[in-house]
Length: 281
Image 1: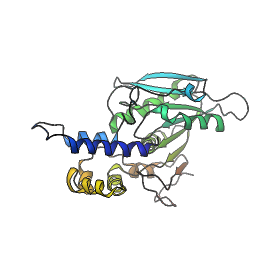
Image 2: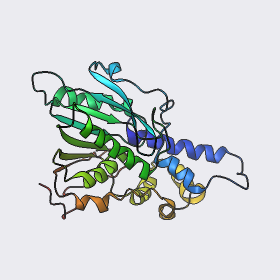
Image 3: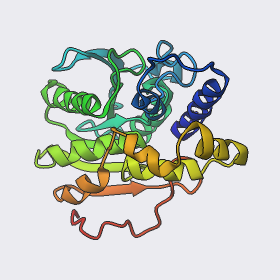
Image 4: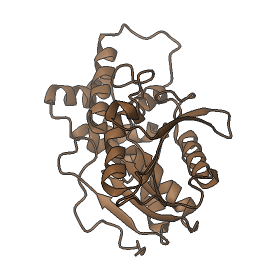
């Protein structure tokens, strides 16, 4: 299931539960708790927190399952998939992958397999806190600690410390990748950033997200009763992910933007990308 599809399912599930639920007690969770669940639906699809497909399920044999500690004492699940031997192998290149906002790293192994088999790279797949088998609860600050932890791990690990690194992010993972690349762009081992169907700001995405719901009764329900109009939702969103502020600061590495016309969550951004200040070559 694609990240966008997962997010849509989670969004509808939470709304339906809210409609059927009895009146909340006098003391309830603050609104931002519900919005955070919409942004980080880590339990969608079902069993995503404890059922993580392994690379071996997709025919990959040369890999490691890792558990990496963070500076704030969380433990992050990860896969390290080695590059193939011989042929077109680029054993000195490691792709650091960050996935979208739903599911877990196991659901993205087929993408990692493409990097390994077709491009000859090794791949490091990180699981955010609160996702898959990782501990903790996701939020923007914590996920960026996770991302830097993964980057530092690659740079310290004997097998990969001298490798060139390409950061690859999908959807939410694109926002993670942008901030990570902005912070580490002067590291000579970081050679590129690849972004697939990411967004420029979570607050800017919310109105577009609501407007993209094709089922009109549900859309009207969201706008008129269950959740305030989208413009007010943005004020309650504390998970900013302001890629529009970080992207123009990335000047030391090339950036490849990939965008699909049929993404149901992240609107297509026509070319040329609206950042004339981007000067990386």
